Length: 223
Length: 140
Figure 1 (cartoon, rainbow over the protein chains, first blue to last red):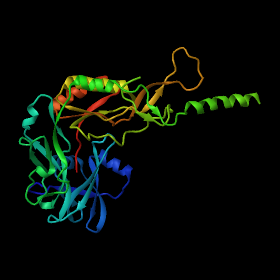
Figure 2: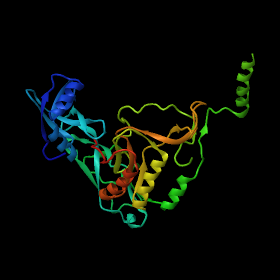
Figure 3: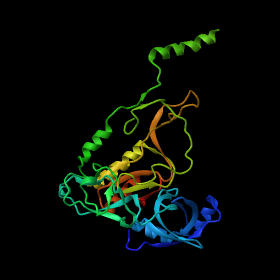
Figure 4: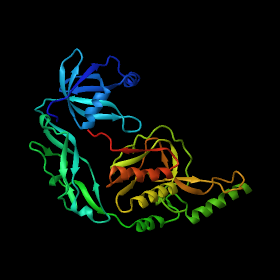
């Protein structure tokens, strides 16, 4: 979490539904919902530009200043994406206390280059770039820096150093980074070029059955 | 017929079907760091997928890992030339993947952004549809 919790001004939404949400988006607003802590869920809209700037930085905790209502500390719970899968169209915010323990998905910043990756044909594959952690909202980092320069062939969740007050929920044996040796291109091409010319058909009739079927209609015609 | 195709199928031939709407699944970078996303619907043949893979692999040599996110599982039949209509559905000509706008076609991992961009551009030349280069989306 940044030293200061960013403040986002929110306006309550009187009318809900996809048509009104679409109009808000064209006006530069981002539809959102605030829920949790036993209070009534509230539909609000945020400034799209400002919210996306904070989200791209990796910030997840915001102070939502709702117009004409109380200020709430909220954690980003979910994002909805548009039809091409990358533009944020809706944000779910859940009410939290800064001293409350929460689970959150945090981005990993990989720094350095592993020694083993300097060999020809060896590449660094990031199996996942985020892990789930459990910590106080106050201690939540925007991202976790992971130094991969000293890693062996594999780096797992259990091998990374987490900041104080943070524990990993993702199992310790989950692979984060792996060094893979890429086979020669020619070998790969040969592997895909060979194989069956047609797939096996599970419902295909056997030769005997097919023969009977072929004869049956001929008999019908004679009658 | 060779290249990518299913190992076994329930039925030999399929009806054509429709390609309506946008992709709701497989529309984000899941395995690699960067991806090539289609902006148009199309039947992408196994040969086109293979051409894209070869183009990128020859460019990247042994530097990065390429993920193919689509698989040609739809048999497309075609009547031979100068054949009269009728006499049943024709034999399978090729296998195709149904792609809708937003489908991630290829992903690249283990290379810097500029190299990934060049590799995916080479794939895009081989594709019969407009494509765009994308990175990983915001995570929560």
